[in-house]
Amino acid sequence: MSDLKLISIGNAIVDILSPVEDTLLRSLDLIKGSMTLVNDDQFNKIFLKLDNYQIKSGGSAANTAVGYKSFGGKASFFGTVGEDDFGDSFKKDLEKLEINFLSSQVESLDGKTSKSLILVSKDGERTMCTYLGASTFLSIKHFDPSLFTVDNIIYLEGYLFDSSETKASMIELCKIAKNKGLTICLSLSDSFCVERHRDDFLVLIKNYIDILFSNNYEIYMLLNEAENNDLNPEVVNSLVHTALVTYGSKGSKVFQNNSVFHVPSKNNLDIIDTTGAGDLFASGFLFGISKNLSMYDCAKLGTESASYIIQQYGARPNSTLTKLL
Picture 1 (tube, rainbow, N blue to C red):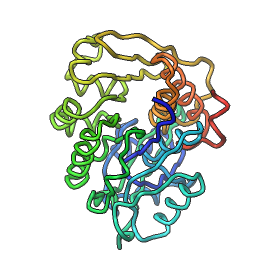
Picture 2 (tube, one colour):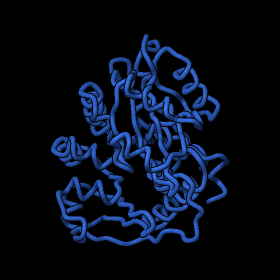
Picture 3 (cartoon, one colour):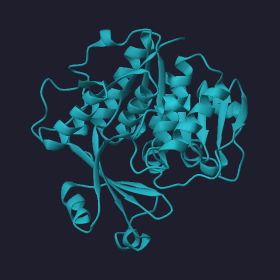
């Protein structure tokens, strides 16, 4: 493999980031570190409680595409935005980065672009409240299958399973990609998302996924394992060919060929905001794949990328990631 192009598929979301005290999370009955789906009214009620915030384009798979492009790769993003200022801003942000936005609609929807309140605690942990909006209408009706070529890596975010229409589209896209022999990757996204859709995830992974990205909470939820147990590589690789599991400050593990190896984390980091750590880990790892690096060096580049992003505010790099190469 060389010079692979990344096609990320996911929710087109605008992030509203705000530093908060944990007391606010408790008053809102939010579980720290989780992602909660909310309706527009609930979103606005929480938003009104925030005094200080920044608005940035986000979305898990889109962030991964941005990171991949920042390393010097070629990337596209497939998603849906609404016909509003947030949607226009999302598309323009990708265009400025020379990332091709592939809309799942002929025209923008007459609706609201998806948005996520990202509440950042003092320890850098983020708690998200997400209004899915237009993202729930992601459809392959207007997707051109000829875009899937052998020099593509397909990257999907697990959050797509939170809508029946996007889940169906995700499965159809996997069928097309699999028939063309493409490498298909999945991020599990969130442990609560895994809990909601565990059985469906298992079927999708077993049938279509080549590379799985997960943190320790998500993989244990998926495999229904106690968190104090060591994962059996044979069990993991009976489900998927390659699995990357991140353990925060304890580093990451790569499961492949019924074996596992550990990649240490970086030390002495000034952690500001963990939003996008998993997204950018995937960026670095997949860019390493595109350059034929070893599994260890791919995971190491993912670690470098994730370490960089958690030392800034927001999930998209403020400067080029080529300096990490």
